[in-house]
Amino acid sequence: MTETLQTDVIVIGAGAVGENAADRVVRGGLSAILVEADLVGGECSYWACMPSKALLRPGTALAEARAVAGSREAVTGALDTGAVLDRRNSFTSQWDDAGQADWVADAGIELVRGWARLSAPREVDVRTTDSRTLRISARHAVVLATGSTPTPPPLPGLDTVDYWGTREATSAQEIPGRLVVIGGGVSGVELAQAYARLGSAVTLLARGPLLKSFPEPARNLVEQGLKNAGVDVRTNTSPASVRGADDGGVHLELEGGESVAADKLLVSTGRRPALADLGLDEVGLDPRTLEVDDSGQVAGVDGGWLYAVGDAAGKVLLTHQGKYEARTAGDAIAARAAGKPAPASAAWTRYTATADKYAVPQVVFTDPELAMVGRTVEQARADGLNVSETSLDIAVAGSALYADDYTGWAQMVVDEDRRVLVGVTFAGPGVSELLHAATIAIVGEVPLDRLWHAVPAYPTISEVWLRLLEKYGL
Image (cartoon, rainbow, N blue to C red):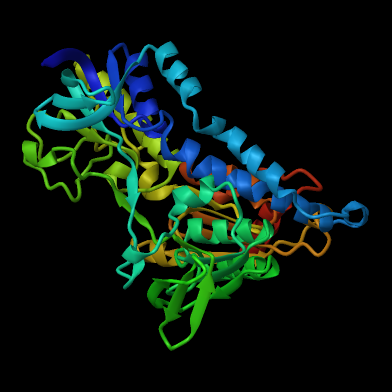
């Protein structure tokens, strides 16, 4: 027997993005039901952002202690692997979502645990985890916040071996003696360094350069950091096939004839929006991809009742950006439900995720860190902007105090027609904390002549701002 429920807004997916969407519509005076079959809190809480950074941080802290005379001499041991894993486990609440579920309830959001599928406009069928069937109808909107799914490469033999994706790598309870990582993107480089510092002999295979969307001097520093941590970095290298080995591990043949053996294989070759089995075809949409406007509204849907946010929208696959999109969509839904205008065409309003286009901050949490916001020189010129580039090594009093032999790099990209920043990149130890200042400068379109008056405190690494502006000519 099918039970029926009704609410103002249905949100499919209770990860960080879905939680934000539901919370925002409730704050806007509407009711909301969250549907989730997995852990409430989603990928970021249990298998991505938090556990991966928890695995990385102890190794970075130890390296930082060794980078300063005085503390260096006090370091006598290696990482305590068990303690690192226990601390990582604590950040995932031992993969128990009770606390997150309590937050949902306290926020006034109803939680339904199960698998949701669109069955008609503003209607969702749910097969619950306790084998019931629900039909939920929404008065105003349905929001897809289903995240993304890994995209393994078409590697011969991959389907015959037991390999890790990022979920398995971030939740593993033992450290393999030998690890091969396929993928030179953010997750691949972060996990390669984390496992190298935890004791694995790590080989990283990247089809092209590492972190190819970032400026070359910045990614070169990260590559050297990986090598310093003991990672065997092989760029412009692809596996040709993989098979199981007699010892229970894997054996990879590389293009060119070499081979690599490992106890465990980690495949980190990107992700795609998780849109399969959602019933998109039932409402006349292609289940492979969606066209989404800046308020999160899905194109091609009569009545404008369907929204997609976060990885499901396919714009920027970053948790913080997905949460931003969710807040934007939630506000737009609440405004439209109240009969207020919520245009998706007006930039920089609370109803438009304009930053997705112009000011996306992103951090690679390796040692050294890589932090970037906005556009590279190449991206800005492709967008038709008349830009200049100013870059230099980070060599200020603050960086010298931070670590002996500190090595870093900074770049700013300036729209010369408006004399504002459109892109900033930092690479070096501790630079992630510089990023928000750059994000504010870009979002606020702060003129360089005014930015000159933002005096960096002495002695901090932020002095690099002064050096960049001086080199630019101010």
